[in-house]
Length: 492
Image (cartoon, rainbow, N blue to C red; front, side, top):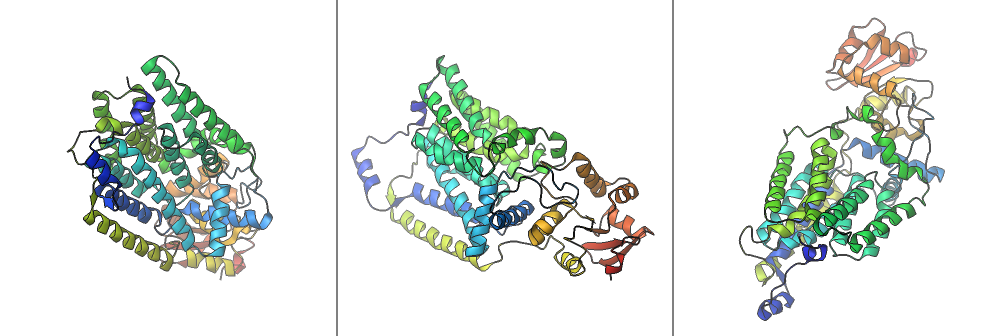
């Protein structure tokens, strides 16, 4: 079997002329291909923000700066008020707010673009071990195709970048000490940080299978990763940040209705791209891949087949692991020789990158057309939202928007922070969405106002109910008020 050091070496040409060509000024076709993929990654990351959880992250950053502390209990909801809440992504939340206040929301889009660009830069370095340009481009391109769907502009990007940096350290491409700041930022940005330990342990077990001994390099890698995680507990949230992933896994019932926690349905193109990568994993195994390459890739691939949210991490680990075993698979072009065409091409990529940045600056940072913007404003003018005496029924993602607009005054029914809401609140929300005993729920929760999608069973029930009056409606949303509510007089 192949040792770790042997796996991570990229063969170099022994031809002196080739070496001189590589050192000559200019760029090669491989440089151009990498730059093009980095450009695509920037475009993916700097898209207009549509993710509803981002709105709550931004609102939380605003709250942290205003209060000079990270909230330990829920400040936003009505029915979960006072529930313990671990703000896992406090660091990106603060960063989002500071950027938004200092230069505007476009700066957040550029930040996300830079994160995905860095992710692709380091991934391109990892797949260089495949050597052939076609194979290398296919592996990195597969990741960015998957990323077009899964590299959403939110704190997840910090976790993905943390993983690819860990892989570069593991494959001897970056110094071990790099992991200390990487793990601190990762732990304080996203709850995926335990995946770092899972990867290192899988790598260690795979190395033991190969050689029947524990590689000291793996022990050092595990030690520094673990130390980095422990040091990361020195933060405004404290040790609860380290416990959060365990707590989240304990909320399986709450997560069952969340799409990204469900298994892939293979109805989307990016899922089939991942299936293609699994085929390459089997090919690498046939070509003699070591256990320390196969075991982490297989383990994370299984996790991806169980939950869509794991596809992003699995694809990165998979291509980095199998790259050395796909050498000589397609063609013999390395693309390292300098080329005037490639140099011109990189210049063109630079121009396109400038245009992509200009687009991020000149277009709205957040897309709000999926939210009931006018309806929330209408309610706010009548003190029917963000009022501690008003109970409003709304969808989870609408709760994120209200939080974004009104902060700690929001008093929403529910939003997408499923990690801490009482299960009965989540169950009631699901019944309002998918069907249930509407009368029993609205009476028990004593809702004063309902803001719901027009084309839904609950909206039709509200329209037919003698106890409710629809006071505002369009093709997307309705607003209804309970007639015997103390707030009914405001619904005019």
